[in-house]
Length: 117
Length: 112
Image 1 (cartoon, each protein chain N blue to C red):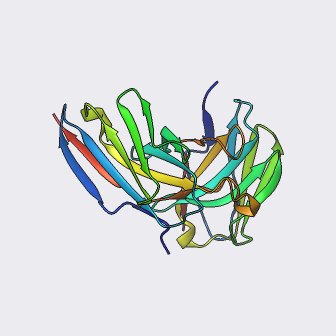
Image 2 (image 1 turned 120 degrees about the vertical axis):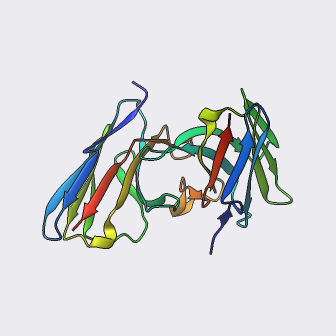
Image 3 (image 1 turned 90 degrees about the vertical axis):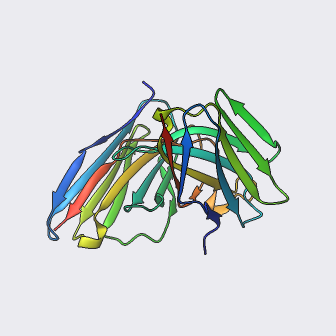
């Protein structure tokens, strides 16, 4: 059972335009969400996170939006640059629930972003 | 020092070998993690250490044995692995278990 889903395996965007990566989750206990970027043969790099008490968090060119009622989050990259081309993973954690799974991250399947010059 | 380091970068081992993967961080983080990632798949959590104690074991086979000698070091001891265990093994650390995790570059393991 996939609790975190990224339904678009790939996304292609022109340099300078907006990239929108989407992520849906099913577990209502998730209350902390993160986005990671991964280049081939490297570990994931943390980009940005959001707690469920917020609906938006911004950091430079990256903005994450959270819609709790729809159980949906998105990552906006503006403007997109060729160096942003990578696999993007969203991840979720259930911090309020505590228990033995406290701090466990559940990852989506990833979306391959390609930014064309 | 703001990175997680892992050694070796690549490892090839036979099914009867014993080897170890090493992970180190000097950010003062108190939680450390082992993940396994197969090609075109997301990272899958294996173990979590919090304050040097094992707090999560995701039903990992006993041929994988984690060890946390101190707050900066995390090892993964490997014994009698199977070819299907070939994967990228990632280590991560975080300030505490409720903070963002920072990943190392991984060890590419091939089991022959």
